[in-house]
Length: 299
Image 1 (cartoon, one colour):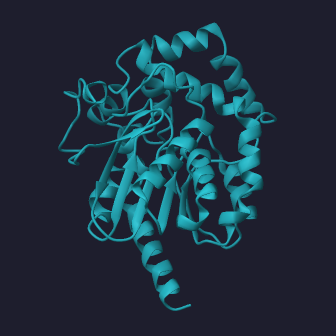
Image 2: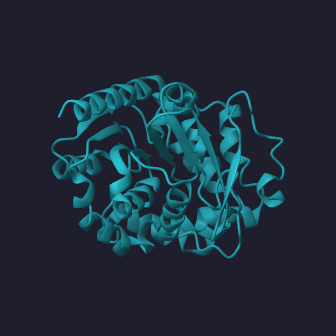
Image 3: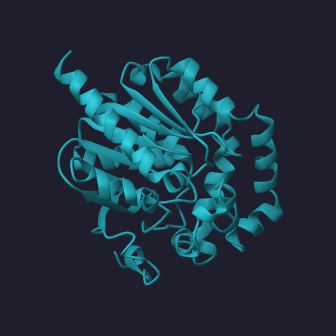
């Protein structure tokens, strides 16, 4: 456990005032928070974020619901084992193991970024435990034919890409900032909470591995997309930042086509909507929870 708990002096417990919990998984020690009681809302982050991204959501929504947020192995306060391959399919396997070990049911799963393929794949596998889906900017289809993804893939698999990720901590220091439409929404203190979980080269391998998986796991994403029918009939809420330079509104158009009954809300903000439009998106999730609960109570 000491490896998971080491060196958290940087953690701002006023911003993140939760009890740290750990679950032993096959891949390592997974950190998570589990606050409140009631229907389960399970928050799944992408890269280079961690459960800190959802702190405002958990503080607010845990008054009525049981809010659980994980840190993927290799991220946040979870263990960062050197032998873990860090691919989305492996993270998804970890998430399924987590869900089964905690035996949680009637889950509203909330996904974002790489947490989309990770969380949705696990949700497909555990579809009987899933009640509803909340989706922030993400995808779930092949990426190998996408020119923008190909460009990123070429850089990240080069010597310079490896140097930037492992030596310069490029993902949380620079890419995260690029994910904000209004840079003022990322204060120095909040930015620190994303940079400090990755203090050295060995702790940053997870960032490099998941980056390589943008195109590297392309066929696996498509397989999950082809199985999405297991979740399609459940209530969906899509909360989309329209100024996202990574996942543009073209991605949103594809979700709309696939999920014509989804409730969709657009926001003039970047990739990290949870940071830029916190209050607005919390309110939408609250409405969605009440609306769908009312529907299920009155079929």
